[in-house]
Length: 361
Image (tube, rainbow, N blue to C red; front, side, top):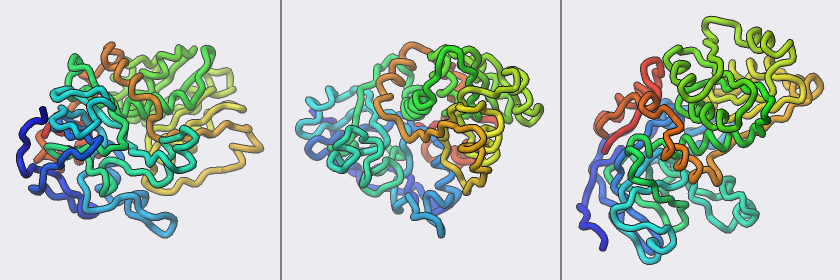
């Protein structure tokens, strides 16, 4: 039986760049095939920070159309307790009232060319939690999973702030899969924020010959060691390109995964990767990136792979967290109440004293 829900709830509402407000709004209801959860923990992602700051990807410029549709509730990293199930939802998702559940960030249409080909994560008219009006996000006391959402039960043995890490970890897993890591590879992961740390843990499971983490902050590199990095390099203290070249007899790394969101890391990767190497670009960039495109073709004949979202990776992420394969107590550094969402954004933006920031509605 569905729980008795209040009529209204507290929710953060995005009205525009740097115009986020905590408001009282109606509690969502579960229609046919839908799920309503009480949000138990929700993360602050780097993309949330960039949206708040007004990055062109979210608000548009002369090069692109903005991705954010205000007024909308942000938040796409979350775990919730199931409190209402619409007709058919329990059977479809294997969920019961009281279960902990997560939902993939994308809600695909199921009908476009990509969905018909099984490539649902590239759905053309898709909705995305936290940015589109059809899919309000998790910076609220309650949220609704639409009928076409991709939902998963989460074991209650996983602490709630750790379970909110399923979404970023799943994205990290997909990026590592795109790298096609082999046993003898030297792998460099540039940027060990929350997503980069997930990539380190996922790449460790691939057992490459040498796994190198690169960042500007020793605090994060210390966590990367615990996540499985063989070697950690602080790019503010050493020339990381020279270091990697020295370690590889001048050839360069086999796989380079960019997870910093900074243009300099793209240039750095093109310099340190070997000929015929694989470059995985994951980050949401705040600004356009300019590089010597000739390196990709004539100079090195590189494999350039993008990584978008987390197809088929949620069950893997849940299993990794259930097995304790990541140092989650070191990754989740800040847990704040919902009304301190601005402090959460500031902490996540700074990055010098935080890794993963969560809000606890």
